[in-house]
Length: 191
Image (cartoon, rainbow, N blue to C red):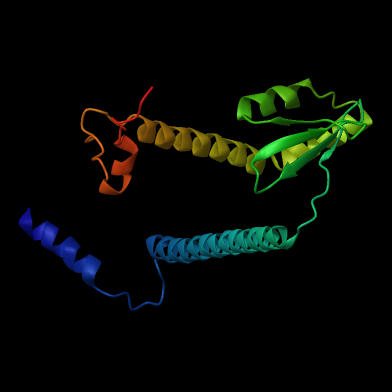
């Protein structure tokens, strides 16, 4: 039995001299070629996707740089009552200018912004355009609103911590010799 196994091992190791390849050899070589092709196509797709991501990041960086350079800000749009909506990047609030330009209001939280966007009628011409603009800049506006609310909360905590100092630890102010004259009482004064 060991002898038969040894003969088959020798036959498998022996090169073929007749020039014909077995079906296994053809399949394995075509499998290798297919594997190389799929790996190459996968690498090409990854490079293409990476190139697109780099291009998108570059465009985003350029847009942010241009946005920082602009002082003038355009309105986001108008609602059905012709109120204008403004977003000032540095302030972190969504402002509402009344149609008569005498009163202003603002939205300060993401929840208010979401409720406002839900109330807009997309079928209306002005409100549809306003909703599209708000959706376009939603991530920037909501991030600015959240950052502003975090900053305000942090600022109030700092102010409260300054006000909460204990009076027991604070030493009483010493009498200044320069102010001693204020304690003088005239005993010779006749009433």
